Image (cartoon, rainbow, N blue to C red):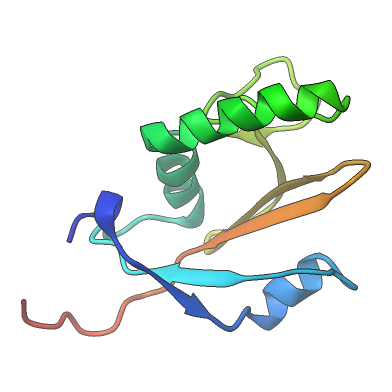
Length: 128
C-alpha cells in the first residue's frame, strides 16, 4: 500500500496530544502505516501537508469561500509564506518541532486548532 493510499486507523490520543490544548472540546487521533522509511517528523509533515490530494485542495477552497463571508481566517494549504512572522509548514504555523513530532496550528476567534504529526519506529515488517 502506498503512503498516498494508506488506511487511517482511529487510535486513542497520546498524553502529549491531550496536552496540546488543555480543556479542549474535541480531539481525535489516527495512525497511518506509511511505506516511507527514514523520515523525521518535519519530512513527514512536509510530505503530508505540502502535497495534499486534489479533493483536499477543493475542500479547503470551498471552506475559504464560506468562512470569508463571516470574516474568519482563510488558509492556502500547501503553500508557505516566506514573509510570515512565524515559520509555517504548508501554510500552517509551526507551533513546536522535534525529531519525532511536528505540531502545527493556530488560535482563532472561533477555534484553537492543532495537528500533531508524529513518526515512530515501525515494528517488524509483515509479509505481504
